[in-house]
Image (cartoon, rainbow, N blue to C red; front, top):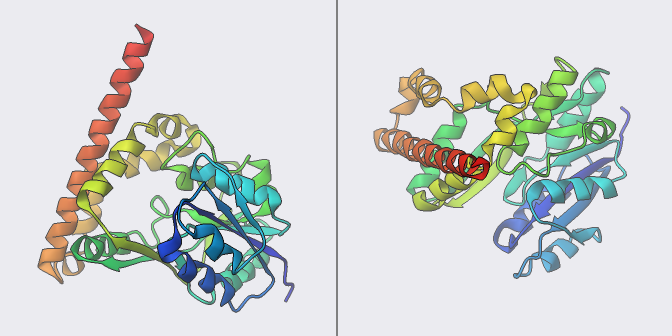
Length: 281
């Protein structure tokens, strides 16, 4: 089988606690024709020192994750690019499966890799349960593996988009090239660490204030309508009651956490709308 070079891009910011596991999982891939590129955003811990143990392609760039990703891809020489976050770990066959799938059809432009969460504490268990509902769901999973040329043609990630950029790029690709996003079975393991309910709600509040750019793009409207609808999400959760209540406390906690996140996001949207109205006055 042809073995094209794959550029793996990892943006970092104060990622020392989990970066070793992430980069080791890339090193341990069964597919070996890989170049690893780490793009740090002014970390104040020893993130850069850890990264340099695995690759000499360690750069500094910001201000946000989308800009870091695009910068890393510009340095990449691979025919394909894989974008992962520094709190993720690849199961050993991920890149091999992506390359095999990409080479199986000429019209494939991007590939979804399913995610499974893990972490410490009660809220991490709730997040793990939530994410398990999204596997195989097109409007809640986003491609991370792309043909380099297509990534460039689409302009990469929208650097003015924060929080929903993972969805935005694949959906723009799918709008231009229908049925061009495929998927594989091997997993990305997402290290949620020890989740704080307050912090996760604060993050949703922050991201929601920047949702307008994502929501207004034609390529995103159909998915956004589903993603932003709490009733759609509750319908999904209650469609599998045996899973939801296999551990009743975790199931109830997950529903409560998601309700708090939606409420925080709604507040963020109100603040954003109020600010826009005031700017027009």
